[in-house]
Length: 404
Image (cartoon, rainbow, N blue to C red):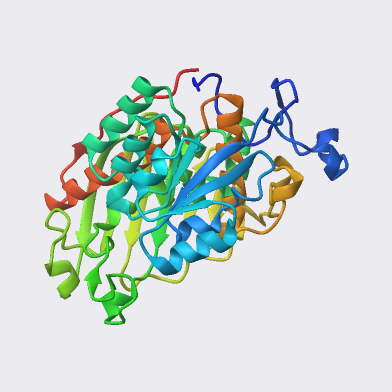
């Protein structure tokens, strides 16, 4: 399928004829009965999915979306392959990813494998005529970023990144507020991903499986920046253009093994310049990290927004000193009725499922298309290089934006 149109953004409904109509929380459409809320035209045929990776990959809703069907699964580990088979009893089961890609019934491949495999698997599948939705990060080298974009251009296949924080309720609300001008000028933003790794406290959990190292062993924290950067970039609408980063590590065998680019850091702090002439701070902590996972903050001339750590709540501030609690929105009105349910990572999994299936069915660029995917991960790749050079400023490549 060729890719046309623009990403479906929060607050947009698509009529059965595919015309886009902007709506707000006050729209009468949002007051309609659930059966009347069917965002997006129904596909002429279901998107036939192949799911690769039975860990994280089993937590998405391809088997429940009204316009998709899982026809194949693949997983090296027997326990996880069994999990996918139980979830999708009619699907063909494979061990090898490449065998799944050969399956002619598969229209699209969901890649939920280890980080180092993401880019090459996505590229491999697209070159063989499959659309791809891939877990984060999209890439761990700038060359992989370039190859992903080149592959989308040369094949015309749809590529989407499954960045969960993009569909956190607070981030979705802030994107709408930005479009409505409520922030005024966002002159400063923050992103944090605090995820304490038990292995760094000598409690084996992430770094080894049956005595063999996993992809997480020694991974530079900034290589997994996308949970932090997705909110910053998608809300401000700006690219991160330059970075100065400082890293910190401690005496631990896992860091001394240096599996990735001589990494000695468990925690990193980066200051970014943006394409709009503003600044942003992003932290990635894996050791002694404070409670909570993803947090964003946006400082504007008319209004500011601050996530509270770990609980999905937030505070809104308006000058000079007024502080109010944010009233959470679940944004489930943007989903087909079949997916209006609780899902992983603050409800993001159902939104990611719907956006990918809809983008393939409607032949349009997904919201987290390949250009956004590399814009989310490339700043972290460059930030790590800055940290290795004691914090010197480094320029981040501009990979462009999707047409339209």
